[in-house]
Image (cartoon, rainbow, N blue to C red; front, side, top):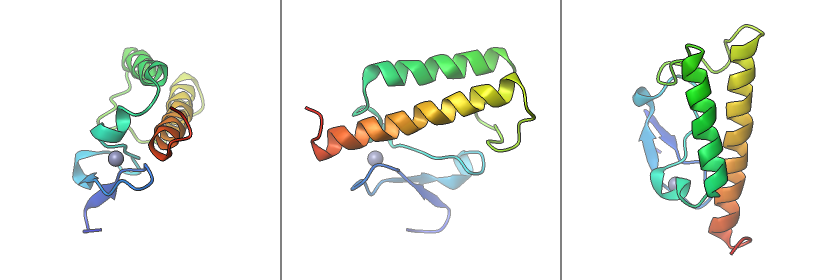
Length: 99
Ligand SMILES: [Zn+2]
């Protein structure tokens, strides 16, 4: 992979994104793989992001590992857990475990 790029996390996908466009330590799923994930999970993460914005989290500059204990950190944690489920869901669809 070229420097300055971050890979889509879905297995077998060779797409990458520009690292500079995201906060440090951001994990990404490309648009094509994103659509493989269950819709309710994609809705859930959008909901978590909306909730975070109301609490003052700017997702474009968020520091993933740097929130003090409290509600913001919980929202980041929820986001991360939901992201894990989206990765799992998209991967399962991709490799054909789920129809
Ligand atoms: Zn992908």
